[in-house]
Image 1 (tube, rainbow, N blue to C red):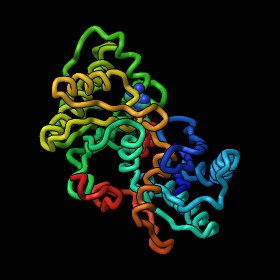
Image 2 (image 1 turned 180 degrees about the horizontal axis):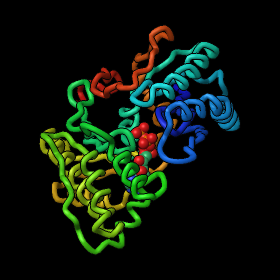
Image 3 (image 1 turned 90 degrees about the vertical axis):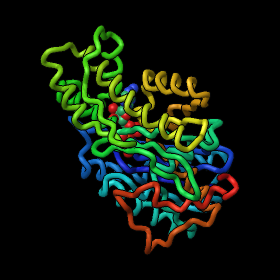
Image 4 (image 1 turned 60 degrees about the horizontal axis):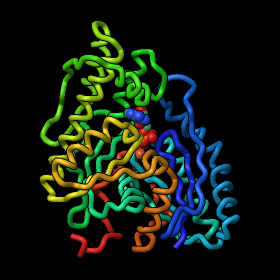
Amino acid sequence: GTVLGIEGTAWNLSAAIVNEKDVIAEVSDMYRPPIGGIHPREAAQHHAKYASYVVKGVLEEARQKGVDASNIDAISFSQGPGLGACLRTVATVARMLAISLDVPLVGVNHCLAHVEVGRWKTPATDPVTLYVSGANSQVLAYRMGRYRVFGETLDIGLGNAFDKFARSAGLGHPGGPQIEQFAKNASNYIPLPYVVKGMDLSFSGLSTAATAALKDHSMEDVCYSFQETAFAMVVEVTERALAHTGKNEVLLAGGVGANARLREMLDIMCNERGANFYVPEKRFMGDNGAMIAYLGLLMYDSGNVIDVENSHVNPNFRPDDVDVTWISRDFE
Ligand code: ATP
Ligand code: FE2
């Protein structure tokens, strides 16, 4: 099959056309806030403004490869989680496309799209996935017909914790890459609050404590200590999910996954446990249209489509609410 999918849960608007083999075309346009963080209404206005650019662009790119609109079997879109105004804008575009091409509509859970694109584009088959982005931080694994959430943040995502700190420290947005650079030149570890509650995580207090630590310590030492503490927390929960499920693969997903130190810490943990560690190519780590089109394809192939009348978005859409129709029972 061939599916056109649209992502737009937050800052990145991205449309892609995929089939079972590969990504045929992808066109994206990123909303860049003038200052500070993301303003939901402005991001949604951006998505409305650039919707025709990404949709026409992806159709044109596909046409040059011999795939035209009449070859598209379904339209998929990010149904959530994400910013309500952004989700509604993208859903409207997806509905219009499905109606005008007269093909089924597929509502995709954004978190699961990160997992499935990783399974597609790495050798991982049945991994524990650590998904760490701006708004999300979750440890997920498949079990009996669902992707279960083994641990997750109780407040903000790890990327947002980095961004919040960066903003109050007077660094630009996004914070993660800059924190990573400063951390490389640190000389001391400063103890910061390590908050793992059961299998869940909390980053808000850690971000605030890191900001406060700047009064007495260098930017380098604070960035390093912030990273070491936060990454030790997510690695601990990932390791416990491995132990609990008996799985032997770890997949990294989300924008924070670009961080080399996080990858190193996960790699060490996996080596010690005899597990395999997989990181997709950078274009499939952050938010991208290809992952929405690809999970859309898996869902379409397994009959998991929705009516336009019942295609409302869900800003708090949980991955464990999704009935996983695209994985066969014998997988368990
Ligand atoms: P989602 O909607 O899934 O929450 P998002 O809009 O936050 O996604 P992503 O690209 O997945 O987008 O993640 C962006 C986040 O990743 C930002 O918070 C940014 O600070 C963080 N980030 C990017 N690069 C790095 C890095 N090298 N180290 C740490 N964090 C990073
Ligand atoms: Fe994401």
